Image (cartoon, rainbow, N blue to C red):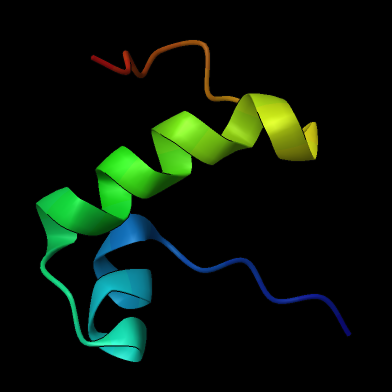
Length: 43
């Protein structure tokens, strides 16, 4: 079973704010070869 978490769900999971979780995801996604949403901009 696969579960995809949104940035809003990842933040509380690690005890950080949504914006912090988003920055971490944007920074690590190229290193982890995660698929990025073409409609969402990082930065």
